[in-house]
Amino acid sequence: MGIENKAAFVSGAGRNIGRAIAVELAGRGCNIVVNGLTNRNACEETAAAVRASGAKALVAMGDVGDSAAVRAIADRALAEFGVIDIVVNNAAIRPHQPFLEMSEADYHRVLAIDLHSAVYTSRAFLPGMIGRKWGRLVNVTGMNAMRGHATRAPVAVSKHGLWGLTKSLAKEFGPHGVTVNAISPGTIRGSKDSAPRSAEQMAETLRRIPLGHPGKPEDIAALAGFLCSDEGGFVSGQMIGSNGAAET
View (cartoon, rainbow, N blue to C red):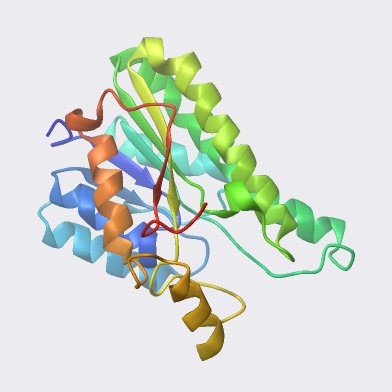
């Protein structure tokens, strides 16, 4: 499907959606750069799953919210694989903090990881894609990008900005053979959340999903796999929801 023997960078790949995307792309024949911030053991587990699919894996730990760290990660990735054809910007933090109580440092930390990281990784790997006239950028946004969320203002700002970045880069780099899309997951089973839902809150969440159940990380991974494949090659500048028909 066009990505055999290509190489992909996946941020936040140690668990949940990031791990599922890494494994999905590996199953399609793609070598993977597995990125995480602190949990190396989880990233090594993802790398082992990638290798079990017959693909190569490089674990490249580092803070994607820091431009210098991204440059170092990119250097390692390019030294290992020569090229990076696919970038999946999945890393995110989603703290619950009342707007008037959060510090400026807290606010800017969310923006660094949830938004600026996609700028840094895109700038690091786009030149190679342009040179080969082929590339895929996939940004993981979320329903916060469209409807906002009380006590998560910086997350909503970041995810909405990521949607704007997606549309802009799709227009700028489409002539160079690069597609840029966003995936907006709904409620996904097992996703990290700093404020776990009570049974009553989860029941209310499920009532808002017409399909009646949360999604799985593999649901998001399958969509990412399609967008990175040749079959998804005419899809660009889009934010595609995978949310069981829940209102965005």
